[in-house]
Length: 95
View 1 (cartoon, helix red, strand yellow):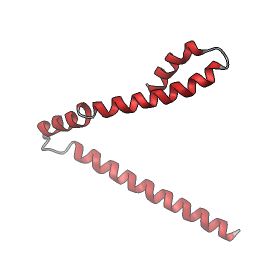
View 2 (cartoon, helix red, strand yellow):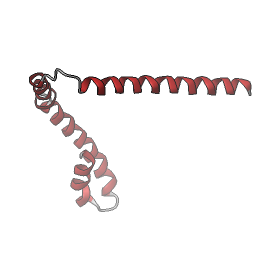
View 3 (cartoon, helix red, strand yellow):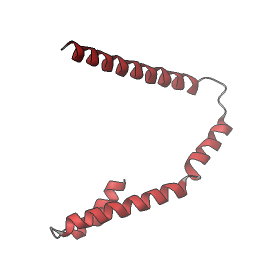
View 4 (cartoon, one colour):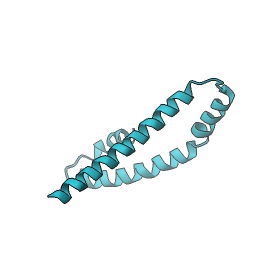
């Protein structure tokens, strides 16, 4: 019984420690987000790099994920005659 209490205390302590580290990181990010000098040019370049230049990766990931979902959905819907719902189901699952 004492061992269970120690394990529980250790797990709780580790959880609180990790949660606190995440909270400190979040506070640091929020603080540095609004501290001048705001470099708008660098921000726009980062948005372009993260958003527009990763579009090909997003398309490939969505296509292959959609194929897997469609395959699994078709095998499940075929049993009940609901193949007509496959397209909207895949679309909603990807969104």
